[in-house]
Length: 282
Image (cartoon, rainbow, N blue to C red; front, side, top):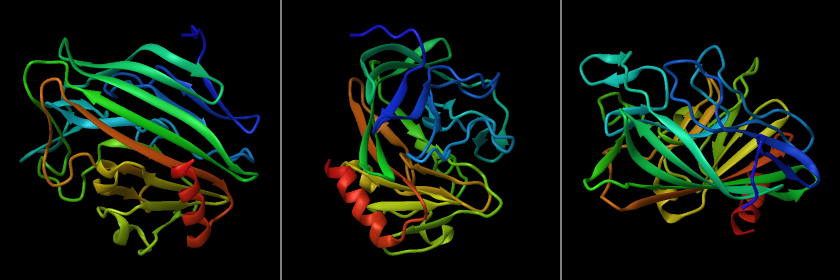
């Protein structure tokens, strides 16, 4: 294992495309966690935003969960059934432990999720960057969550706690907010209302001069519906707990893999589908 003394920078096709921040300075009440920011296209266009004024707890590309056994690893207020969004002293922290591998184009990291003075989850995170051509590259992110305890715990979301349509929690990408809302589409549907809360092999978010194409790369990930925002703010994530809480038995592990195409320009459906196929099978 190579010791790392600075924040790792991901390189692709000889260019820096992402920086990994082990502990973003988000202030109290925002569930500190490692995140990728800034992330950019090969042409240098930024495609992430971190701690924006509208949602200070949105941190570039991260793994964020609003309810792990009642603790908030998302940040901000917690949705409480019958009360709505509520400020609670229940925020957890994702702590970097070590890099098992750290190369210019990727890394393997061990983390622990702690809250309430105890350890709730152990995580193994794998991140890699690979080229897809002169104007596109792929970010491959896998996270494995293991319950180290002796009792089952479960992951929830505002949706499972009584807020319809708010099943966020898992992989989450906050894109830059621009003057116009980004276009969002899948192979079969167009528009935020049509794609939010649905499963799809891939989902594209296209802004001013950039396109992100997200794909679940495991059977379990493909079964997770997409959480999508475009009009209010640009963000895409997975839904670990959509209609019901996700249980993790003692000693068990939950694995999810999301591959994201990061492209210059605005892709159409055919180009988005072709690039994401290459990215997932690379």
